[in-house]
Length: 530
Ligand code: NAP
Image (cartoon, rainbow, N blue to C red; front, side, top):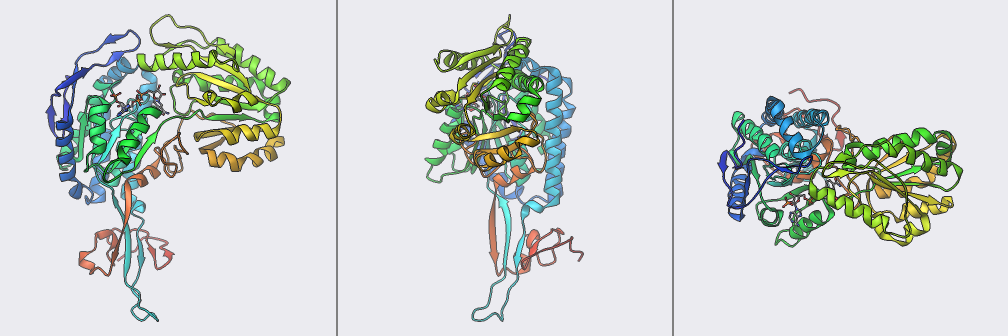
């Protein structure tokens, strides 16, 4: 497909009228064709008008049609073949093998949401039948279902150009819920965004859906992004990126006459706790596993293990020494964008200049542009507790090991942490009681707790939680990965004393959608057969 450099407003290919962005190959710093002229508020207005016009129709589409739409997007993305992988590779510097895996994950995610939509559990139908004879007052007939919130603005992430971008998790979950989506393309991968955006638009057309179900805009987050978030027809926002970007969107959304939810995933350093017996028994293996997870994808994962916490002593000394040896062998890797590379350099320099932190080991230095050199620092718990800057996320392959002098200090450090996406425990049988004592704190701090694994690699499934307290996300009650992500874009509506013919199908007395309802306090065991 020839890239056009245009936005997609519904089914229309529209040229922007603001400063152009271009993809940059971070491995060479070469600017890629074509230029993508940025959109303006007028384009936001057009996309929002179409999305609003589509909303009431799209949110009531038959479950099967909506599921077929999601499957059709997956098929269209697969149909792009090598062109998509080549472009994403050129724009992100990510290896082809990683991008092939990410495409698989993106399509699996869409198909998983199709299955979720068909299953209908997310409608969470509750029926409390009328009790006209009840004393002292009769009870009305009350029925509840979930409906879509409204058009959703999605800000794609730089570090997952497929799985967290134009047709990524936020888009898939919002479309599954029945929300039209307007994507503000990430400036780091405009061509990849166009290819995927056109795939989604083809699926919209093939499924006979209203064109406003999907639009793709380019341009500065300050103009297009803020205009989107403040448009009264947008009812929720999905975002993955920097803390400052997320906070800007949250503030804009809260300052609206009608504030709306912003589901922003921002910053997490993903603490790893090494308990004494595990550290003693498996020092080398832990060091190797840690460095592998830290340097995966040049450390550009939101679940990157940026903090290690352990008791001071010979075992920890051995771990630090082993880490230094392993990391020395880590080759430098190209980062996603020149901006992310320079942010990484500044973050690493800030820790290096901090008198409380010492370098434990560094990876190999690069010989091309934008190459991430891995780096591990060590500090004392007292210094970590005294200096909040040591908790700042360095987006890339940098980590800090915090040496604690007692169990109490480990608890204090853990208690002191900001909200996290994950917390990892490495433990052997002898460590169980120590670990158990920390669980209440860790549950308050993180969205996912893992034992004897590494936090990178987020399974897309029903039970996954990719979320957590601020600043990991702006709303700890939800997840952005896995089928529970659909709940972010729904709200309950109750229908009281409606005649059956006026009720939506999900709530009709005969249960035509065969949903497992909560009927008069009892969860129906199996589908009704009427
Ligand atoms: P970013 O700068 O926050 O940008 C993400 C998106 O938000 C872009 O589309 C951007 O638009 C928009 N945006 C940024 N600031 C905005 C503002 N003030 N108002 C409106 N829109 C705004 O994130 P990034 O470029 O992907 O990466 C930069 C940093 O984000 C990294 O160094 C890292 O610290 C962090 N990051 C974290 C995660 C995570 O999962 N925790 C993932 C990726 C990145 P423009 O195109 O106009 O910039």
